[in-house]
Length: 441
Ligand SMILES: *Cc1c(COP(=O)(O)O)cnc(C)c1O
Ligand code: SF4
Image (cartoon, rainbow, N blue to C red; front, side):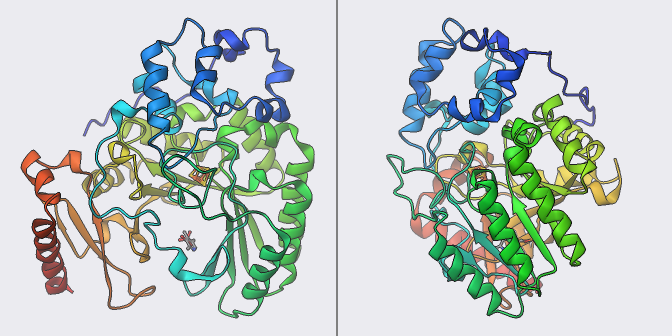
């Protein structure tokens, strides 16, 4: 692995969006207006043609439309993100890769893939309330996000229906929220709640205040985290939507006055996403005492190299966006090309640890398919790199059980990749690695 870091500063030219033909007349105050951004989100392939007249080839748009018709996630991208893509070579662009699927990149999914790969339904104790770890609960408050990521783990629920998935809804409905809050109140072991979805950016300020207030008023919780990708994809909302940001700051202050940490967990994957907008937004949160942490997803062709990951970690640290986790990409349909191996995650972690403060070094984790929860990528009981299969145990979550994470098919030899397609052969390979894991335990 190359140890040469690229230029760590992700600077973009002032008014960089004006290079997009459709935004050439957009003034800074308009572009910085979150309502304008939300109104002008792109949701269809033909809007890309319209906006980028002359900058993008017809084949690209056809490839995109075809990709969308085979995706578990629908398209929703802010103008801000569109303007950050390098349209001179969109195919290799790390931001394009995350949000705009191309049919030509899609390869067959691994046979071990399931739609709800983390098996969240099995751990639901109320609609959209997942209780997997003893002291924590995950509340899926909404099923909408400011943008939709191709690789979303929760593609079974998040976003609008696509030609390949009809979603289980987790809409922000008062009765469902009430039932979830009652279930949290009635479960004394829960002291930590993650409010996610979907994305808290799609909650109105009064919804955010109401939900946060109710959670704080339970009295027993010690930690509440609000999850939002917004800081990365619509940072102008934190800068300029005072009602929303003040609601978050009020909750953070109220929590602190009661001994509860209220934090924001965001999702930034590439150093180029850390623009001056993001820096200004992070600054506002830092100045107002809001703890911000980042959870990245390790994605092939986006951040699976040392240069990108090390710049990301340093930039986030410098702006007090604490690098918390880097997830090995979950098994999600249509994104096999974006997955990387457990080996790659371990190698990257090894190279990155030591570069900066230990508390700013993310833990590289595998969210164990089937519901074992997050496991340190290195902590496998067995890992066969040739078969491409890692086995994890989760003693504090599901004692006695083993969980399998398969490397992507493209990382295997062609013979091995075709073996996985043969059901009997696949079963044998799973048994081989499981046996080795049991021997090591
Ligand atoms: C990720 C997750 C949490 C929070 O886990 P941490 O390791 O504390 O960040 C809680 N519940 C569920 C179901 C999760 O997936
Ligand atoms: S912002 Fe998060 S929840 Fe929403 S689509 Fe992206 S990964 Fe999924």
